[in-house]
Length: 76
Image (tube, rainbow, N blue to C red; front, side):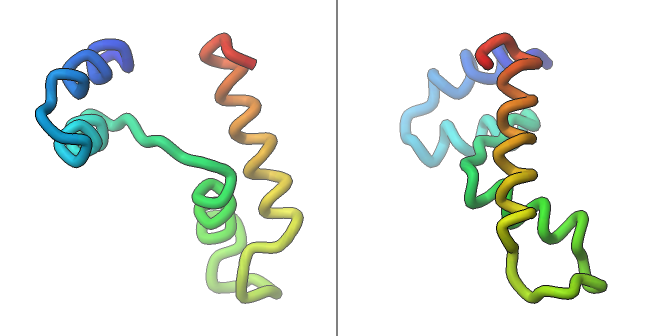
């Protein structure tokens, strides 16, 4: 399913919660710098991390990941 089709289906939802559920069911996730930072920390640092919480390196990687996604979809 394309992102455009998933967004089109979500727009026909009756509530914001329903729209978000529709997007998630179709594999479309919305993230910001904070949630991307947390995800990067969990995936790349994991249980062997030398720090308990995301650090500035994780946040920088999140910004770079968001920018790369933007470039790949033509918005960056």
